[in-house]
Length: 184
Ligand SMILES: [Zn+2]
Image (tube, rainbow, N blue to C red; front, side, top):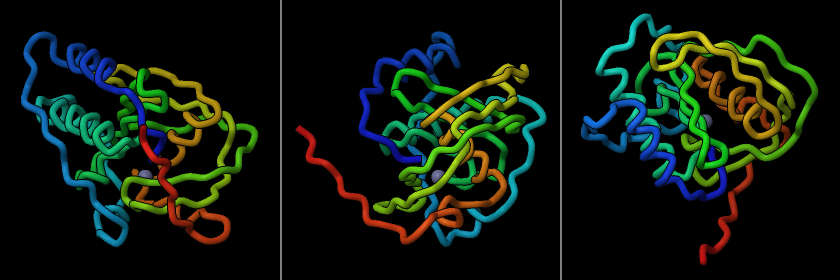
């Protein structure tokens, strides 16, 4: 999902240290797939074990998301059909969700949503205002995450990607062009 530009360097480094200790592997910005590419419309497979390759994928997803000023990215958006999403709606609070499942929702929020796979566009989508999800962390340990507002929206948006769905299917009214604010 796309969000406001954010200061990310500090928390990103922290996340890398957490993932790898002192041994920073080389990271890479991956190519973000765009609407129309087949990989975005397929159901993703569960992750059954953590491997160095998957850790590298997660690092690359974080770096790719921050570089693109996104607040969330799902593995199929970088061409990998695995149930992995990364989300950070504040720039200081990265979440890694492996095999996430939404187990409870309540309320409603209606607002603009965008997607790194649909560049330059946004549209109005209604989502639950509260979401409880269960997922695995990078140690393949199950945890629960409760979210409201933008984080709840991001979780729903990213879990949709894992099922091969884009937010444009849920948009109320037309897709609009994003107006970017000038950066000072
Ligand atoms: Zn998206």
